[in-house]
Amino acid sequence: MNHGFVKIAAAVPLVSVAEPHRNAERIIAMMADADAREASMVLFPELCVTGYTCGDLLLQDRLLDDAEEAVRVIAAATAGRGVVAVVGCPVRRGALLYNCAVVLFGGKVAGIVPKQWLPNYGEFYEKRWFCTGSDVSACTTLEFAGHEAAFGNRLLFRTSDFTFGVEVCEDLWAPAPVSTGLALAGAEVVANLSADNEVLRKHAYLRSLLKVHSAQTLTAYAYTSAGFGESSTDAVFAGKGLVYECGECIAESPRFLMEDRLTCADIDIERIRAERRANMTFGTAAGAAGAGYAVIDIAAPSRVPVVERRIDPMPFVPDEDERAEVCGEAFEIQTTALAKRLKQIGCRSVVIGISGGLDSTLALLVCRATFDKLGLPAEGITAVTMPGFGTTDRTYNNALALMRALGTTVREVSIKDACLGHFRDIGHDAAVHDTTYENAQARERTQILMDIANQTGGIVIGTGDLSELALGWATYNGDHMSMYGVNAGITKTMTRAMVAHLASVSPDASVKAILMDIIDTPISPELLPGEGSKEMGQKTEDIVGPYELHDFFLYHMLRHKASPAKILFLAKLAFAGIYDETTIRRWLGTFIRRFFAQQFKRSCLPDGPKVDAVSLSPRGDWRMPSDVSSGAFISDLEQ
Image (cartoon, rainbow, N blue to C red; front, side, top):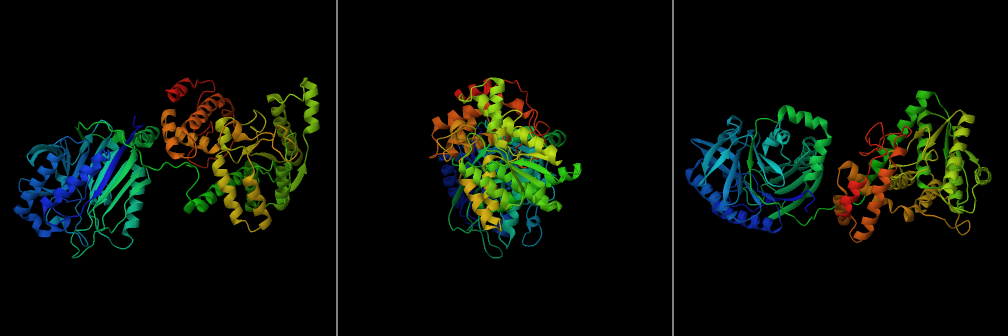
């Protein structure tokens, strides 16, 4: 199984200007390399058969004859190979000349796509030599390089694994890119053959253009551009290969090299299809504008490439270079959401339970920043620590220190006597540390917070995070409940990153020290007593599994609609050398079972802001019956 992955190669060969046969040799060699690497498609730059900078030689039959013969040779070299090749070449049609992309496979020319937008400004003079492909019919036929091939400006090419379309350089830069229509008509991959010269700041603009365009069209966009060997009389061609997928750059070659280079990228076709199914805006646009394209079937075999793509093990956590900005933005979303809620209900008081753990720490920091935003005194935040049977000195002391350092109203209410009385009332043996023993503590804490909120005229701020909601790791009508859940859109891995960021920007050295120690504290509900006041009686990740794995599972299941088998495949790549397959499989099974079984808790969640692309709000992103079966998903994992 290839799990929807196909390998695409962007080739930048050394070019010999006006020497098609020499260029054909290099193209064939690089095509063979791409085929050996199990690439399904390899694309070459615009006019690579002749060289882009031939100038008026493009009007000479001598060069055009040689170019057509070179394509015949390249086409013949595709016989017996599993890779589709797309090359740039001038193509005559009667007395007219077109700048074309030629699709080759199985020893034949499968189709020819003329460039539609011809640049004729600055250093470009393409209208001097070429006719626009915009005036060509959607699909006709043309004799070229010894083959009768489809020729037109609305061609799609379909293999057993994916459908692709082709555009040439300026077709992307135009106000209405050709590839927009290709994508709406069904192209999942777009190949752009370009001869893009270098000027200052142009490359950064190109990268931005590719990022946005691939995101808007929900495509994998492969781009290759002419490199060393092109004439430098008036421009320099640095050569580049870039591949984007739905707005994400997954491969990029270096520029200004004086040698051939092949940039391979593993495209996730299943992800593209899932994105399109979920995006009704795309579906509506495709239904309205996707007609009138001819589909050319190419009998390319399905390939199972070795996936070399980096799979991010922490998909919710931003990369280091953007972490400060993203964490800051997430924090602003949380504080703005809470500020709106408080202003709307005219409330100047909040109540929050502080355990000394990550989630309540982030929630408290949100409350303090929100009160600053609203110009309210920090004393309006009633922070309550509620030590119980499993509370350790470390978390207790951190909770008190943080509350005091932030200037909140501090209250301490032990739950031990109340819980022991409750156990007597319901006839439960306090020496039996079962679910009743644990959940009674969680519900007692929630009751305390709700009643203090009544005392102070405030609302209870929930601290549970998105990872806990996914696993159902919350006591129903205990910590599951609040009046506003500020962490509902933040995963555990992101919570840790955000607390670390807030520690790094804190002007208070004592606050920073407290936050860093909280980050280093093992995650625990602290409901079971340990061996003394310094030992935790339970650690969450020993029970339900590592949160970094669960957040990975959650991201790919909800964001990309991946099957359990594919999630396992991706996780093995992402966590190679960290977790073995047996461990990943075990915790993925736990995730699936808990995710389905605990939906009833998510069906009645308090309000809380969506922060990242994934949310489990029953009013927003996730709707699922509480009594649905997980059987099919477990079966997929087991098989």
